[in-house]
Amino acid sequence: MRACECIKYEQHKARVLKITDVRVFRMGSPAHKTEGTNWLFVRIDTDFGISGWGEGSLQYKDAALEAEILDFGNFLEGKDLRRIDWIWTSLYRRVTWAGGPVSMSAISAIDLALWDLKAKMLEIPVWELAGGMHRERVRVYANGWFEGRFEPNPDADPESKEMRPSAKLYAEGALELKNAGWTALKFYPYGGPQIITPQRLRHGTDVVRAVREAVGPDMEIGIDVRARIDPWSAGRAARELEQFNIAWMEEPILYDNVEAMAEFAKSVRVPVSTGEQLYNRWEFRPLLATNTVRLIQPDICHCGGFSEIRKIASMAETHYVSVAPHNSNGPLSTFASLHFDMSVPNAFMQEIFVSFVDRYQDVLTRPIDISDGYATVPAGPGWGAEIDLDAMAKYPPVPFKQVDSEPYLLF
Image (cartoon, rainbow, N blue to C red; front, side):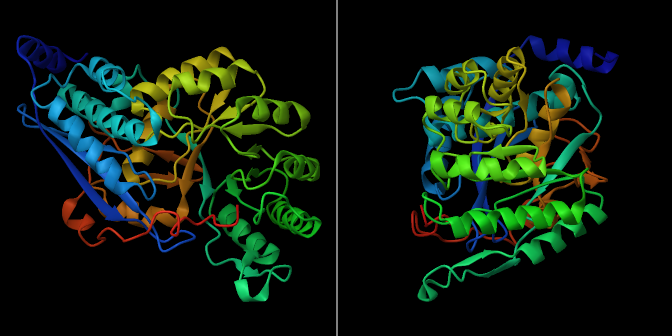
């Protein structure tokens, strides 16, 4: 620690640094496949005069998540903000019906805010509080770059007005990314029901081929199936994908049967990734024990926050598995993921939704630096930035209807 940090730390050791309030803020995100969803942030205030920010954005579950966070807030009031791991364990172990997406996302948001708080108290960035840098910048890959690059699906019922990726438009978009300095991207070439038809399989292959030919051999390509097809169909797709030297095949089948995922990963010759819908180290343990997946993708807003994703990464390291945090969320999720990536040895790449970046920069007090295929966080304590509430007010939360508003209706 620097001298001033040691003095401040000594001053604070003698008293409890109390949490005084827990507040929730929501805002609308840019449209992505549907009319959009919402980002949800938590701010924890203290008697020390500083506040910490976290995020728990959980698509289409705003009401349940906000209620859980505020209910946990009743427990947090008066607690010492420095006791991060004790608070995490209390929220997870001392409640009935622990786990699941709502509770884990609430814990994640609170945990992220506490890391921000403690780092601010010590006047250091979170990556330094976590043990220091393994890398000064983080390689990133682009998602969300293909908005509007679709065409009518001639194989679907004409009345359904179903759209599919356009090979030509995807190739053009991918080349634009490469020319802008991106070195990796991800997209979703397959859609429709779980049992894929030869026509759908062929079209997905054509889209991947067009993108690979456009960007050349050196750009990393991730293929996200998002569990849209069954193991038999996914196996056929994997064989087609071998020729394109893809970096990973993400969520090739439904995620909730570890044995089925492991059997699939062993049966194909492309690297398999999964994990965005697993919620803590206990759910990752049986998956990692299979020694079959090459990449895991926990989401820092849902897997238990900064505390838990570090434990998941340490466990993955013992299986020689890399970590690429899932991130289809808001700006604080992105900041927190980057601090994580900077502070662990087995971080691979960080997902960035390029269609969200402008809104990120608009509502952050300091911007994320994304250039030449890498991202860095701004210098400063905590995450390095906060949410500008005046700017956030320009984007009120959007209404939605559970199930009907979900973008993946064909499986």
